[in-house]
Image (tube, rainbow over all chains, first blue to last red; front, side, top):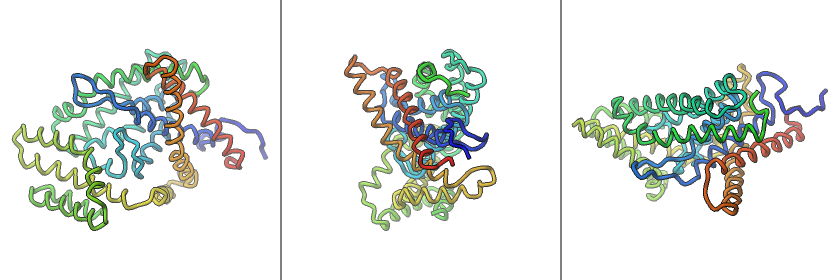
Amino acid sequence: MSVTVTPVSNSARRLSARDLALAAVFAGVTAALGFIPPIYLPFSPVPVTAQTLGVMLAGAVLGAKLGFVSQLLFQTLVIIGLPLLSGGRGGLAVLSGATVGFFVAFSLSALLIGWVTTHLNNTYQWWKGVIIHLVFGLLFVDVLGVAGMMLIAKLTLGKAIIAGVLPYLIGDVLKAVIAALIAHGVHRAYPGLLK
Amino acid sequence: MVVLAVVAIIAQRWIPTALAMLAVVVLAYFLAGIRAKTLWLQLRPMLLMSTFIAVLHALSSNWRLAVVVPATILTLVLLAALVTLTTRTTDLVDVIVRLTKPLKRFGVEPERVGLTLLLGIRCVPLLSGIAGQVREAQLARCGIFDVRAFAVPLIVAAIREADAIGEALVARGFDD
């Protein structure tokens, strides 16, 4: 019979109430970032949205397990029909569209970023964060995204990269840096999140 | 639905059958009593990408792929959107909870999955509200939008919110 309220989960596998709440609010953060009006770059027709910031931040702030659960929750909410993807997309339709690879990458990217951040960047240094985000938030996501486009849109590798990676590249690199600066700020304001 | 999707994937070998499948799905929308405007709203986000894919295939003068691939993607997307349009969100939450039941042996508790989903649904308006407040505060102070000065307070507020939700759940006997 225990009456102590501990914020950490009491067993290794079970997530505590606070863990579930953290995952839920971070799914909300990813959604809220998708509502920010997209930024249009002068040299590209494709807008840059803040949504993927949420994916990198989930991993970098919450760590592997909760980062993964929060983005899996976000993906599930999108699939059951909430219009949370930037541009107001949502529903099962996301899974049959050409950009499914990028969508699937959300939770896996948060998982990898979280794992590497916890193990190699525990005392959060922002330049390490940038490298982690470039590898697991950008390269990894683009590999899955391009594979999805080749499979569904029957594009060749080169064309899939032209359609799905190049227009976003500058914005994505910027986001990797911004996400690291934000994670750095959050860890300073609220220490003890990465365990 | 599943049958239609499989037929659509087989139909993408020839131009006429692929277009016919697209027509069948559009017909299904009208049978379900969905207005043309709603149908258009489903189509609109897909148009840019579909055109782009068509142009890329046309450039390598592969006309069959230029027609068939966008048509099949549109068919499958519309089909999936039809499920979402005709089913309530709470019913879909129930489906997910039922789907996670076989995962029990891996330590996944279906009731917790359902609760987390509902928490997530609640958190969307909650977080947009906090985002609005942070943004207004920031505009009132300096009048320019800085992503970093926006996201750090947003996330710290979100974590505090999670602490409160966690405590409320424990107070209601959630974690025994």
